[in-house]
Image (tube, rainbow, N blue to C red; front, side):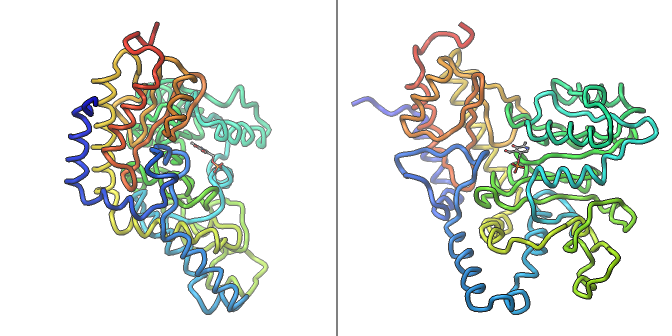
Length: 413
Ligand SMILES: Cc1ncc(COP(=O)(O)O)c(C=O)c1O
C-alpha cells in the first residue's frame, strides 16, 4: 500500500487544532465524503438551519396570511439583515440595504451615481470585468445618449494601472466601477487606494463585491467608497439567486440625491399613509424599491447568523491559512504542471492554469472534486473557511495531480 503524502498528516493536525473545523457540520455537504466542494465562490452551501428558517416563514404565512406583516418580524427582517451585512462589509449602520439582485442594484446605484455632465462622462472598469457589469455599464452609457466605445475605459492589469488610468482620465472621469475581487483571477484590488485616487480626481467610486463580501475584510465606510453592491449566494450562502445587498456612503444620504424610487424606499414612518410625494427612508434603505421577499430572505438570515457569531476577523484569518496551504502544496507538488494565476493579493479563491486544460478538469470532476472551469484554461478553487477543511485541500492536490495528463511536463509546453 502506498503511504499518504506527508501533507495529509500536516492537514490532519491543522484540522484538529482549529475549532472551526467542526462548523462544517452546520452545512449540508453534497455527497460527502465522496466529493470535495471548492465552489463556494460560485454558490455557497446550504446552512442546515436554512430549511427551518424557510419553513418557519411558510408556517407564519399559512397561519396568519396578511397579518404576518404585523404579527411577526417580517417587517424587521431587511433591517436586521442589513445590520449583519454592514458588519461584513465594514459599513456604518444605515449604509447598507438588502434586497433585489446584484446587477439590478448596480443599475439602481448607477442611476444615482453615474450622472455624466460638465465633461465628466467616462467610466473606468477592469478590462476583464464580469460580463454582466460590462453589459450594465454599456447600457447605462447608452441610456444617457452616449457612446460606450468613447466613454468606457477598460483597464488591464492591477492596482498601479488603475491609479495611472485615474490620473490620465481625471478631469473626464465620472465613475470608477471596480470589482473588489476579479472573478477570473481572484485578485483582490487595493480598494482603499483606488477609492482615494478616484475621489481625489473628483469622480465617484463604485464596487461590485460579488466575490469579496463574506470572503475578505472590507472597510467600505472608512475607504470612502461611494457605493457598492454584492450578491447573497456566493460566500454568504443565501441560496441560488438569493437576495442581494448594497451600500451607499452616508455622505449621500440626503433627500436630494437623485434616485429611482418605489414605495419601499419611502420613509417607513409615513409609508402606509400612502402620500403622493416620495420622501426617502433614512440611509441606504431610501434606495429600496419594492416589498421584500420574506421567503427568500430566510436562508440568508440563517447564514448571516453564523457571520455574526464568528466575525470577519476570525473567518478571514482561517481563510488565509487555508488558501496559503493550498498555494504552498500546489507550488511544492505541481510546479511546472499547474500555474497559480492568482497574485498574492487574494481571498479564498485560487485560479489555476492546468496542463491538459479541459481534460484535466473533466478527470478531476470525475474523481469527485466540485470546482469550476473558466475558458480558456483556468480552474477556480476556493476553500471556504466555514465548511472546507485542510484535509480536503491536501486531498484536492492529490486528485489534481492524478488528473494531469503527464506529470513532469511544463505547463507552458
Ligand atoms: C462579479 C460579478 N458581478 C455580477 C454578477 C451577476 O450577478 P447577478 O446575476 O446576481 O446579477 C456575478 C455573478 O456571478 C459576478 O460574479
